[in-house]
Length: 129
Image (cartoon, rainbow, N blue to C red; front, side):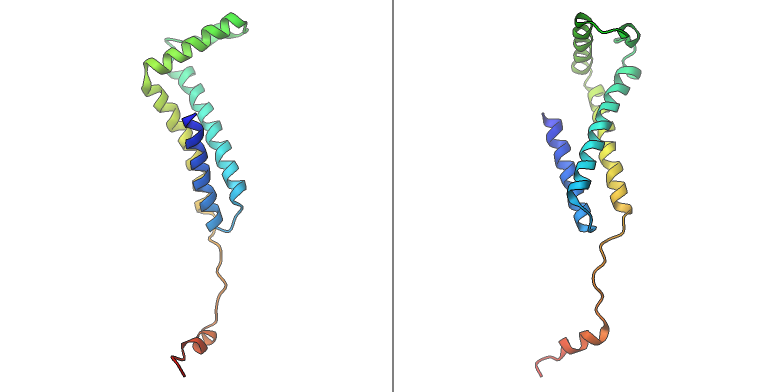
């Protein structure tokens, strides 16, 4: 639950950044949410497949039955509760999804302000005459 709130806040921050660039805040916010969520799932898969080979053997779960899926869920829960550094690892990979969208927004040009000719500014500086 806390993950969704953090992802929502990060998407909101990218939406504000997009609004200052003159882009659609909703579009970039949803893109940020989706990117961060996908990166979280990729991070979780990476942690389970690479860092937890000693605890979880994914090769034995080629065909899922109800009992095997409960066994896998129990093992995954134990892996993340017994080793909190693994949870931090997949959270940081998920944060990379937010940073990727933020990088894309930073590369977009800023919204152009209407240029005022210097002659138009002369009339406003008359100083009380």
